[in-house]
Length: 419
Image (cartoon, rainbow, N blue to C red; front, top):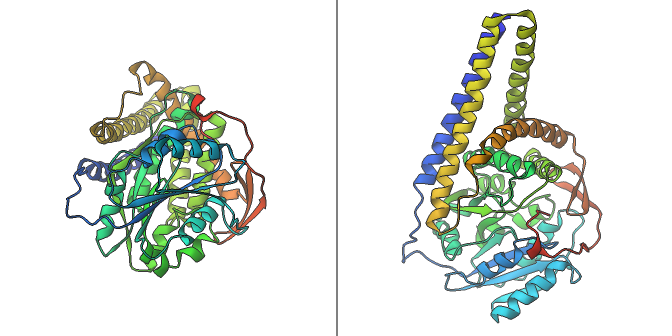
């Protein structure tokens, strides 16, 4: 038993060191963030596309922010699932309040059965753009952009080698529920992977329209489950790269239940299964970490029963070092992102010291939920997303099998619960 205990100690230590190296490079990128876009940087005419289904809690704030961008020439294309959707009224009120002339609101009419509703909505919006537009910027309803968001997002497209530019999400929930804490912790780790693999995030994503046509994205999006994860591979084949803008770590303050968090993580992992360039590394990493920790816990129980103090000491040291390392890496990343968001004047004091024991428990819960969601994503053939059901036969064989308009009555301003 002592031999196994020592082996597990070194395995977990190696995993911790490996993850620390990955985090270190990501933190360097975050700390090199530049907020000043040089005045000579081109600002091509851009369409900001917002696709809506349901009353997202921060939709009013999102619309207010989009309509007040510090950008010389842009307009906003909003595609709402249907005129009966609760989001339609929210959009109409925001446009009327601002008297905005650069906003076009349309219902989703080109609903394809071979891709997700979001892909259909994005394609509909892009198809209506004339030749004067040079870029399209995608934004999600849970994103509240700062004034220079669009400038920072479009600026890297001036590089002829860059086909798209992306930011990433970061959770700072208002309510420290178990679901919200687990989603924050899981996303911390996911953000590091997305940085290393250059996986774009559709909540803050700009694409050159010339590259959109050259890479055949219209055809791919018309047969895809998501518009972002698959983008890296398509652009790489066309000879372009995806740029990451570290200043665009966008804060999401929504809450979520534990069940809602599980479904969300499983859906993120499903998109990775379909389009991630190194999906089996993700699987191996997730299952390997879970197996090593479970083996440690199992052997620790056996060592306690048999009275093997030396083995128990090795196993306790292994688990303690690994969990302390994960807590330290999480804290380091949180501080780096807080520096960016604080520079924009956004509040960052969401995590109270009194919640540290709850966070420690959430770390363990995250590991279990992640393992379960990973297994669910491996087996998923039918998935439900905002009340719409899809059958997943292959990455480019998606079928919409059940649809109805979003009719849930809910005031988005009165709740911060994710849809």
